[in-house]
Image (cartoon, rainbow, N blue to C red; front, top):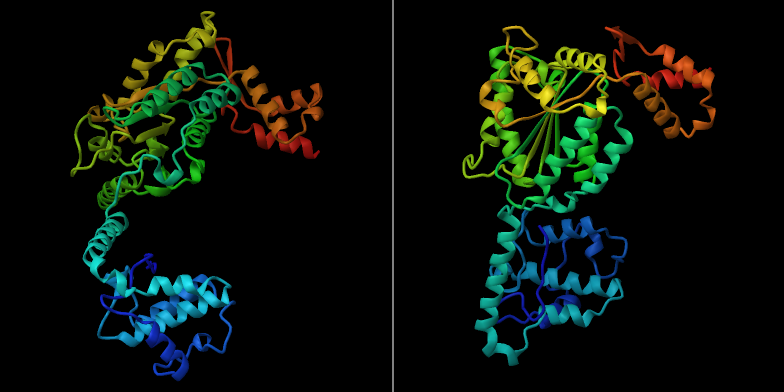
Length: 432
């Protein structure tokens, strides 16, 4: 606990320690603790660290967790020698650091001419004590999350435009929803976005972009909580599911209490135990505080391969009909993705992701399969990142593209794993 001294305040009502301090220095009436020897006036103090000072101050106070020393509130009349030692040490430390000893003395001294003003000063000190305690011990919601929350929607817009290839629906919808949520001082409910599509098409990539556009430290920010189903919720037995639910009921409120704008990312939600994701429902209901706590400023991203085959089939249908992917509309995908996700791609088993209770709160965002030209853009991005763009010859381009697995249906060719394998394949050919 920090030691705080207020200008103009003494270490106790009616006390003036300067004579006692001088007496202690001259006669060693109250010997300083031994050990530590560094408190001896004959030994230098300049090598002491802040933590060492704090440790020794705690020792002086004869208490492992000393009270705040706020003038009037800090004196223990039954142990005056402790405070004489403390004052002695402060003056020695000021001398050693070439600071003004008189300033430390003024902090310790209460001139007799101010005796009549003591009741008012006492009241002022009491107010300060209460204020400090309130700030220290009463959690106050901080929309800026200790400086971590620094939303930059221009950055999100430009990053998605520049680095995410072949996903026009994602760009339009994600930027709009997040921008509206960020710019609303008190949103009606938490923002819930669900990313669906085949592997390697940018779902995790967009999650990273969102985190980096909202928080100073991106995914490493304490305001970003990421859960991967196969890592954090691997077991599907009833006891484990109950444990996971209890864990989420504890962790989500704790995170939002620390940062109302917390971003939660649930990856591989199609692999989560059945019913687990419904744990989140109370936190996204409109106008419904949970245990007196609001979650309306939080954001939830669900990432899954659910409905991937449905999205691919619709994509092939539209491309076969001559529609360019940039002309696709969300209405062409939204309903079929929801229907497919509700039944885990046509089966009767629920994935745990899509019980009807949660459906109405979720914005569905389909991620499209990637064709050859999108994969080539991914290859170029890797070369730029490696600063090897000049090495990307036509021959190397063809070799890398040949390493990528493509599927073809009804004359429409698309990458089986999107751009997931592009970096490893590119590095392989650069090393040859």
